[in-house]
Amino acid sequence: MNVWHTIRGVLSKRGLELAILLFAISTLLFFLLRLSGDPAAVLAGEEADPDLVALIRQRYGLDDPLIVQYVSYVLSILTLDFGESLRGGQEALILVLQRLASTLLLAFLALIVTAAIAVPLGAWLGVRPDAKTRKWVNGIVFIFQGIPGYIVGLLLIQLFVVELRWLTSIGNQGVTSWILPSLTLASFLAPKMVRVVAANVSEAMREDYIRTARANGASTAQVLWRHALPNALLGATALIGTQFAFLMSGSLITEWIFAWPGFGLLLVQSVERLDFPVVQAAVFVIAGLVFVVNAGTDVVFRLIDPRLRRQQA
Amino acid sequence: MTAQTESPAPVRSLLPRLRIWPRAGSGNGMTIVGMVIVLCFAIATIGVLIWPPAEAYTGNLMERWKAPLEDGSVLGTDQLGRSLLWRVAAGMPWSLGIAFTAAVIAMTLGTAAGLLAAWSPGPIRRIVQHLVDTVIAFPSLVLAVTVIALLGRGFWPLAATLGLATWPIAARVVYAEAMSISKRDYVMAARLAGVGSTTILITHVLPALRPTLLVMFAFTFADMLIAESALSFLGIGVPLTAPSWGNMLSESREYLVEAPQQMLVPATAIVLAVVAFNLIGDGVAAKARSRSRAVE
Image (cartoon, rainbow over all chains, first blue to last red; front, side, top):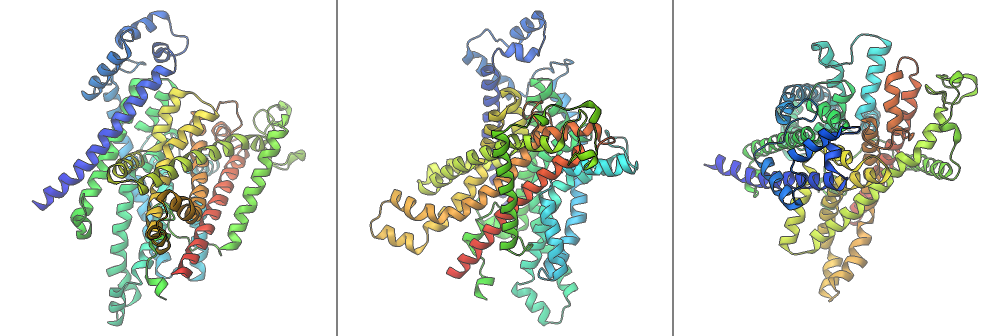
């Protein structure tokens, strides 16, 4: 019963936010499209022939009064009908959903790389943060935090594709082609994660129960493995939840650099081609995905951590 | 010793949630390094605005892809023989200008919303909090890409979109800090003495917020610079002919084999500026932290 209570609380709060967000975005898109001149001309693209413009005009009911257009637009969105792609005529939503697996694969790989880098490094930095070499490493992590992911991606291509010719940098062509994109996407999150793990470990090492364990004769390594690290990992996992939106922004750029066939690439290409049905479907799917991940981590953490459960969802 | 174990709540709220206290750098020295870099960039930006360098736009094909320091070119030349030094300089009003404008918009809106939430009764506060939570939970780059697709490229669409996508982060920080300030003894004393809440806001809360705002501005500026370059890099930012740093990076992708300097020069400029602003932000935050520890 408690579990359901928690889930319902989280879903109602997050669900309300998602509803507001999707409503705001769709309204914004609707009016921006009409503000930017003749929507039919925009939708048809440059150098469109008049027949196509007339067809779009009819298809979207653009001769109706604005309020009628808006209501029918909202209704079609509610039924997840985003229309067909203006280039190719496929159902926009299907087109986007076909890319889901690729994007999730990349995000998953990036999270593994991030954890593999951040947990050992963060733990090492956090156990004795004031040691001299670790201050230097901290400084390097700090600088890395200032290097945008797209520059990391370009540097990786320069090194491994252009200079060493070890790897390829285009599309998804099997396991070796996964390396550079997942490293690039991981670079968005890893420096933050290192600092979170380090901060959590060093905070935990000052806690009373650690002192008790030490007093009972536990070694630094034992204390770290048994007590400090599990605590820090909880915080690091929470970071993934809150940073998932940021990870999606990063995957937009990463997919574009490496021509990775996820929906970030589809979104950028559709924006360039002014293919608005697809743009809209992509934005809605990304919003939904972020919602699922956020709500999921929220629920899991409320179930794990009694302190959170007592707070109002 | 007590200051160590007590976690100082107002200080924690100085930073957006995920900035972890730096233990790198030695405080003031690194802050000054950051400030010197920013000052150089600022002077160069103003210089380029007053005397636009023609070398950035016209090149000689005979002199293309010169390596740095080859034949008197300082940072090398691009695929049209244009000087990379001058192009990076000519890109400053675009890249740094948009980042600055977007940061000002985000900070102004965010401060206003944060103070509004902190100073108004329950319903308004909850509406602002919901709004903030909602916008923060969405990938801002996805939002920006979509809006700019409709608004078109250019300085103002980009600056406005980035600012509008970012203000909730500032709002959240300002709200938390304002709440903690409003519970301090001297604010309570002023309230008991009958001072109006608007006067308290102006004479007591805003001055106390200053370090927070400064730190936020530095970090927001760095984030906006990264975001602006990202959008230009995706080809959805400033006009394609403008030599913004993101555009230069985007162009360089095709010539990584022939001329890596075309990528390295704007990349270095971006990283240098971002690290400089992060250094200033961390430095100011560390100073504020030590001061509030002294108060405690």
